[in-house]
Amino acid sequence: MFDSSVLGVDPGVAATGLAVVVRGGAALRVVWSSTVRTPAGLAEPERLRRLHEAVRAAILRHRPAAVALEAVRWNRNVTSAMAVSRATGVVLLAAAQAGVPVEEYGPLEVKMAVTGSGAADKAQVRRALVRAHGLRDVPIQPDATDAVAVALCHLSQVRLRGAVR
Image (cartoon, rainbow, N blue to C red):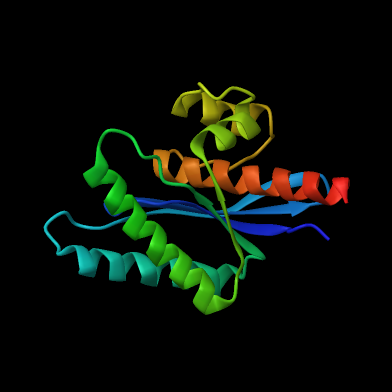
């Protein structure tokens, strides 16, 4: 009825956060997390290939029921947003190849689900994951922490959708 295992992804070309969060009854648990880093000196296609391989390997290893992805923010830096969009496309491709459904959540939606405030900073998000949601093993790396937050947002949303039906 509810997704019980989700791969959260905070996409980027230089650094992508990945985290698998599992729900067992009411308890949530971080099973695995990582930050995929690609060297700045590599050509973008090679960086994207490495990202694809890392996401594909995470899906094959952890067999999540869904992939939750932080949606691209279109701020003033269009170049940065385009790079994140390309990284997002690679994640979508890896999920599609594995037959895993994908849901996207905006940064505000993720912060609201985790902290109750859309203005929360990264430190507040991490504290809320540990204190308010009782998660252990929340990674210190900011991108991986964000991936945990995206996964938790998805698990919360799926549960709410199921309760409404």
